[in-house]
Length: 302
Image (cartoon, rainbow, N blue to C red; front, side, top):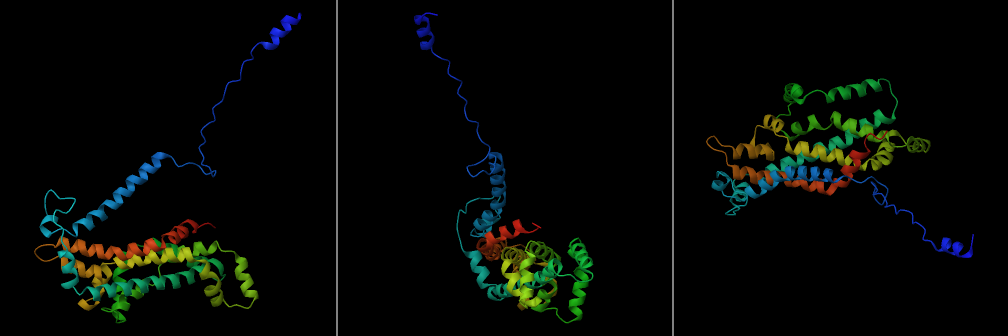
């Protein structure tokens, strides 16, 4: 081969390899899988469906009664007024009803936090005869509708003289099977070495429970407390049956009796009262929402 041919061979352009475009990763920068866009759309639609009734309630509470009843309804108030709130705080003994609701809800939530966590600790970490039977009874009680036990519970409350009293509204609900199951599942995830170390140091079961277990159960206790507070705060049927005097009414009972008359329902007053009833629960949830999410996520790890 001549020198010229060799030069031509060396100078001939070589074909460049095809450029491969990087594949779009289905994971984020932290390695976690990306959330599909359609899921965000579904969640946003669900959020709108949940929020709209509350926005409607808030806007309608500052409408005159005639506008609340208008057909077709108006979304934004044409005439804003505080008349409904004035009636709520002047015609009703609002302070008494609000105090009754707060006492009943706080006492019920506190009782559930203490007693359900105690029984949950016993079922999770202690060994005693009949432990599995007790846990089976707890699970079985979860399947019993509340209406089945309503009449026997009322008869028992009447026989021990607790009707028309705040303890009569509190004591039947200071512990429940859901709270026991929730705390038991959470306490199962706590390491046994902590309890064994406390026993080696001479701590009794009560000291172990209050000094070791409870400080570690913050998320579960917050979840149980908020859910129990919400249920008790919104409870209507039991306070309606137990309380016979106006001084013992809770806020939902008072609103229903005063807003729903014999001839017509005062929807504006009812909506204003509903806003006031919702605000404490919303405030408690916003303050403890992080712990609530942790408690729900971590319950049942073990």
